[in-house]
Amino acid sequence: MDPRQSKLLAAIIDQFIQTAVPVGSKEILAHCDFCLSGATIRNEMRALGDEGFLEQPHISAGRVPTAKGYRIYVKEYLNPSGQQKIIHKKFTTLKEQYFHRKDQERAYEAVALLSQMVPNIAFATVPHKPGVYFLGLAHALRQIEFQQNPMLASNVVEVLEERLTQVLDKLEIDNKVRYYIGEDHILPQFQSCSMMITGYNVRDAKGVIGILGHMRMDYAYNTVALELVADLLRAT
Image (cartoon, rainbow, N blue to C red):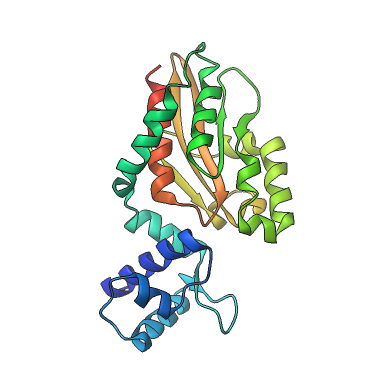
């Protein structure tokens, strides 16, 4: 992928994350800084499709990112620093409402805080407690992808309630934010979803905190939110 295609892919993904509408050359020309003709953009989008980074849901529609496209976006083009000012204001306002309880219970408060900051499912393992605690399912399932695919919504609920602990036990956990997108997931029920996780310690106990949602999540914003809440949890 050359630099021009890289910039175009990042612009398409940014646009799709905001709108949930397939992105065409007209949207790119209207909203992005490209000194290119519509024909050139269409040719480059076709090339990105041939390489598996984009797909076209309908012949007359624009393009949407694939799991492969999201993975390279997160790895190469993600810019969480652009969200720092926006999310720090929200974080500062909300965090005073939380973290007033005992060590183990602070995992619950961290999930509550995170669920107020992101439009996805926030979850965490709680030291010395079975299962995974999660919040935010209702507003996550109001997103268009779950509305259009009730089976996907059902699968996500099933995994959250019954199998997420098994998934987390198989993943590499440390204090970095790690991303699992589409086919990266161990479970087929999550193939249209993305999961972000990081580890934490409360005194001598280890846990995992993360975010789960459709692949069209705002990775930059969610990364900052997850890091802020995890750091607050680690500091207790």
